Amino acid sequence: MRRTTGSCKSALFPCKVQWQENFIELQAGETFKKKVAELQDPTTVFSILLGCYNSYKVNPGPSAYSFVIKYLSHRCLFSQIPVILDHLEQDAKFDVPESIFVGLIRDYGKANMIQEAINIFYRISNFRCTPSVLSLNSLLFLLCRRKELLPLVQDILIKTPEMNIRLESSTFQILIRALCRNEKVSSALELLKLMQLDEYLPSVKMYSIVLSSLCQQANATEVLGFLEDMKNVGFVPTSLQYNSVTDVLIKEGKVNQAYSLLDQMKSEGRCPDILSYNSVLRGFHLANDFCMVEELFDEILIMGLIPNVSTFNIYLDSLCQQGSTETACRMISCMEKISCNPDTETFNVLLAEYSKAGDKEKCTAIKKEMVERGILWNSNTYKVLIDGFLRNGYTIEAHKLLKEMLGIGFTPQSSTWNDLLFSICQKSQHFEAIQVLEELFSKFVPAEL
Image 1 (cartoon, rainbow, N blue to C red):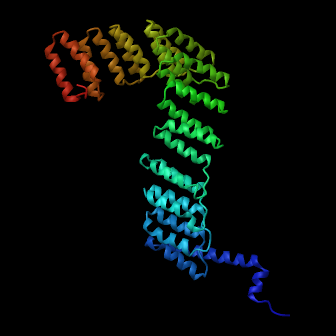
Image 2: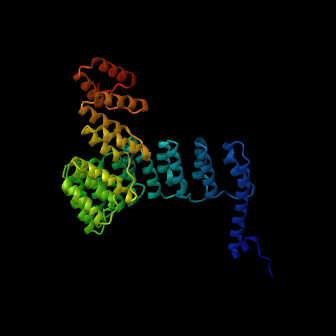
Image 3: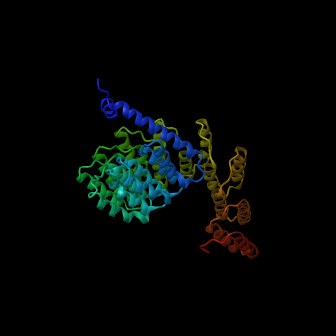
């Protein structure tokens, strides 16, 4: 019988030959990693890679090249990378995976090497690699992070058809987010419409991004219109999104429309949370509609929601403005029964009312209670007391509080200084007025003065 030659063995046992090649390549890789661990000069890593694999008479594969590029990128040795890319383009015998370029684009971006990132994107096809939306999105994400780079995005998008890259929904999301971040929400709306014309389906995330931006940049009419569009395509807004819309309505004084949103939420199976109610409650309070404040507070309890400290602060202020300050004081014990501890603003509401009425005794009692509870004063505490005392002509007490405020490190508003000076001058206390002016110029000079 004739002896089989080596080439015949390869033909008869291809799996065995492949296994041997893989094993040798693995050995070369292990040797390379050991040498890298002992490496003193990182710039020699590529020559070591080629040397290790040549000694085993195999060629490095994609993972080896990827390792070297990452190794250099993470050490900011980007000047070494062009040589490796040239070698990959001209000498490598395999199709280079796109993941290598996606990673390199990101690393270039972190190093603020924008042009290099763009160049490698356009060069991908030279490496026997078909660029896809993955590399496109990586580049767009990088460019869209900075406003001054946005003009480059248009150039990239114009050239993508030549590169046979089809945009995906993820691409549009990157673009919409960038437009909204740069206060171009009208352009983001146009892009949403274009997506639908080209038979793309905008995601709920895209609608969420646009709605959030509209709430910051648009008026209530535009926000409500988009909210309806969102519902018409089948997306039900979350409670958080409804809260954002409610805040826009309250800001424009459209509290009744905000209140109707609560009913819409219920009809859609969304349970308005305490934040939803607080926003509407604040709206009725600002509109001095105290009957609706009372009604809404009762509704909160009927719905089984637990009022938080903000809820109580709004409600207490409403009671005080109706002259029911004593009732507001008694509400503090109700707060504690549901484990809702009063905060500084809770007591500020009471102090504002008592100081306005000139009741120094009640103010002293509340101040004492705050100390006993370990509740610290804030700048607003001083402001409401000073304003209240000045209204009743207690200039000495107001001046004393102002000095205490300065000593703690709080900065009084310019209106507080003006009111104090006006009150002192009305009483012809010129020496005290000069003293206040000296304190003003030594501690703080408001820009408006």
